[in-house]
Length: 190
Ligand code: 5GP
Ligand code: MG
Ligand code: MG
Image 1: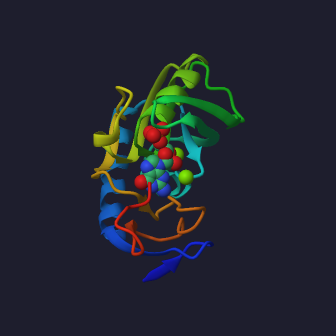
Image 2 (image 1 turned 90 degrees about the vertical axis):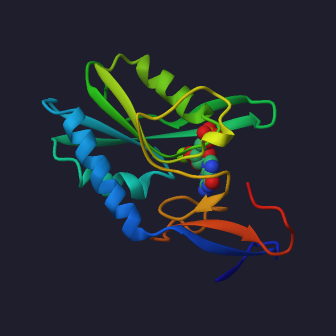
Image 3 (image 1 turned 180 degrees about the horizontal axis):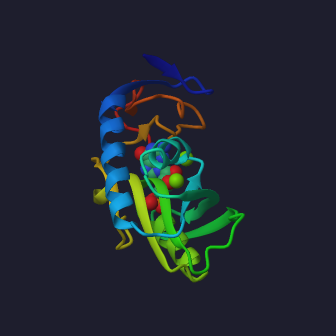
């Protein structure tokens, strides 16, 4: 279906990963995470806003352990081409994670700056154990040597939307993950 930006550029979204494939993968991730944290007192599952809100909602329902949910909002600024990126915390956690078992849930690991700085920030609070689960991974774009312990899907270097991910705050509600292609130029959005 054709879409328009506010300044009139025309683009198309094509499905890359169906809702059915996502659901099957989320179920498997939930089982692996439940095994890995088995015996935990209570897992703290932290969603990075806003992109992970759909994924975390589905994932926690596939985790068969007692857990609580908290959210953190981070934003990265600076020059993306020089890889000098500063990640700022816009909204901190409500709860304390000192001594706790923590799972950080991210939408996508791209250059890796966001997740590496967020994990460092959270580690400084002294969790007992902290791991990351990312829905998507774009390893070809990596600038920081970081990887999530669990990844839903590895994808090529394409800009994707849906299942929580936006393009200019749009399309987060798509039940599938799709790629954005501009029809008025050969360049893809990034
Ligand atoms: P990183 O710091 O790893 O470069 O960037 C991670 C963040 O960039 C993600 O949490 C997400 O907000 C954004 N991002 C990276 N790639 C994409 C993409 O293909 N689509 C969308 N919607 N956001 C992306
Ligand atoms: Mg994000
Ligand atoms: Mg975004």
